[in-house]
Image (cartoon, rainbow, N blue to C red; front, side, top):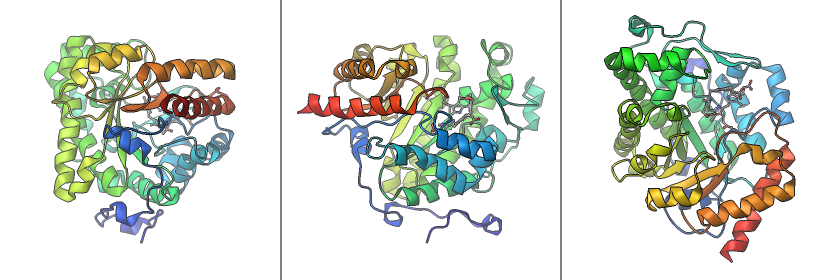
Length: 385
Ligand SMILES: Cc1c2[nH]c(c1CCC(=O)O)Cc1[nH]c(c(CCC(=O)O)c1C)Cc1[nH]c(c(CCC(=O)O)c1C)Cc1[nH]c(c(C)c1CCC(=O)O)C2
């Protein structure tokens, strides 16, 4: 029996472990097959920030509720997760749970607000290593982030097997950057100052974040997530050597530890596909696709040419992406032509998931996203026939 809005007196109980048998059978497994390297009849597609302010039905919910209130209320999070799935019925091949990467810093003890037109804001960011003492030493995911687990279980149920459900986290470096900058930043100068002034304390912080995101991803799979994505949105701000020191070792731990923990729970759950999105990190294509880094899928931003990415990742991973989100401002005919070129470059039969190179923008026209999705379906069927 599943209950999305579990009442707070359940909070002390361990969260149940769900497996495929607890949910309606999956009717569209294209994306799971592509993640495993199998060939498919058409290219699967989903879109980062597919639930968001470009949708009038999302803005209606947002007019009534604060951003983090939606995240913390499983029924509301489920409702907005399903909005693009309903609107683009048959055109999207995955859903992603409505939440935010910044729920992890919140669970670690920092306050985060979402300001109108400004984005995330930490009233008391980490200023220097003495502030590490402000972070909780132990985060209990099943208590502190139970609302995300409940949203996942409810949404998987309500999806009724239409498409698989993604869970996600922010990567350790990206979360560290937000915790120190206190919000968006052009240079990340405060966070990068930590790396050069306090490298050991920086590693301590990165390790503490890694431990929480590993537990959180394991819990998301146990709650019903069928794929996982790790967002390293600020990877491209690091030099190659800083990436090798302060991002890659932690990114590498994530799939290894998540799989090991899931194997102990239920071996079927350990094969959950994992995506890494190291935005802007051109130099990391080889290192992130090397055999000892166990991500199945690499998500690319639009500044990387698909042919180049294929060559440099050597067919070892499935690629995901990567049109510039600004393409959706173009006339529909242009969208179609650009999609055809993108699909030809990536190849359509295997190891490719279409997406954008980053998330939807609030002023995108939903009908232009429809044109993008239809072009991916139509052009990939054409190319595969
Ligand atoms: C860096 C980052 C964040 N959050 C996230 C990232 C990584 C991806 C990326 O690089 O964009 C991830 C994220 N944030 C959100 C989702 C939901 C799922 C989905 O993709 O549909 C996901 C996967 C909802 C959201 N997260 C946010 C919104 C819009 C806020 C609102 O409704 O007021 C949504 C729908 C807010 C947010 N949250 C964050 C920022 C920088 C902002 C402000 C930017 C903006 O205003 O668009 C932090």
